[in-house]
Length: 284
Length: 303
Image (cartoon, rainbow over all chains, first blue to last red):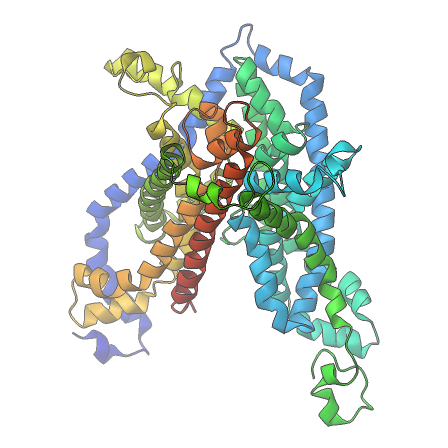
């Protein structure tokens, strides 16, 4: 072959050599790949289309949406889930940012243990976490489930734990990407302490990672069903489930709305993240 | 300079070992994290473990674990494993083909962005709305069901006796909706990591595309593919909300049987439920460990 004789100095020639035979061949293959792509897109879109179509079947036109949007429980549960999500995000960030920073700079030996703990929510499925929390906190000495706000507290605790894996990874990757070591040393040489460095140097620079972690948490918590239904069924997920069992057309309308919300949150993440990092989270 | 060095007047040798300079309180920085994890993750699991070792009257027993072998329980595990395996393999294949199509299949580049965005959304679209969406699609009155019957005479209605969404197969179809997009997301970086030079080098050495796949691409991708499929398995195995909404717990998979044992009225045996939970945690632990190991192996080629 001539390829080796050309050498690395003539990349264009090599390129031309390599692409010419390829271009003629994959034209047949290309049709096949189109087919695969279209099949995937069909699988993706048909259920959405069907849900949308179903939501419009109720007469008069748009009635399912009108009923939904005038249902006080719709706003009540959505607001509740939104509040819980916000608190979850704040608590999760307040715990994970200092921890990831600290592990990176002061306690690198703890890294395997911290990583192990942040992976544990994958190992303990939500349904089991819910039962564990109920068993731990429903009796003496801490009867959380029987006091006011106790169940909300447990719910937030569970969601914060669920958010650990991707929050930690987002922050850790972010810390690596912004060259936080140099930033820290710069801060130190100007006499700043760790808290000050985290608050006014690291946090602003981590904006993108933090926001994508936050929106993912938002998307997951708002629709969460399993843990919510056991601990405190006041959220949007249990509401939608209940609606699905008792009504015909309204659940389709609410599904579409909830899908739009997920879409917005994920779209924001895509724009912020501009990467293809895997986000595995949530309760399926 | 290490991060712990604070003052330039310290002797140089000590700056290298700042931790030894004074009794360090640095561990205090990770206390909130571990405290939170202990309260809301480790303690609940510990309580379940204790519960799984207790009989109804609180005495120590391993009977709950022995009972895992009863037909009803082992059938639930078998069903869960079967559903997870089928959707992991099918979702893995479809996801891999899709990712390959947009990355190396010669499709327009914009489709790649499109697919990645959709996958990000779809892999997180699960639970109640997903179950509902499939009921509206291939449920008894679903759009596709009605279309297929009216146009082609294919009867997918439960009354036709060929298919019902509220079955194992139906559940698998629903799970696929979040499985294959997850595969796309996981496997895309690995396919991206296939360097053009490798293909060129093997072509220069006279390899056919088949040889290239057999001896170069597949061995490199195999740890990533295996790891991804294992992760998909775990992803399906831990799922509860979707199945519960779709079948109201009628298909006895592990999470629904656990729910029935712990909080149900009919089958009330919390100890057995806790033992099942431990079994589930055990399966998930193996899954995540295998995934992490394979991922580490796969990353050797992604630098």
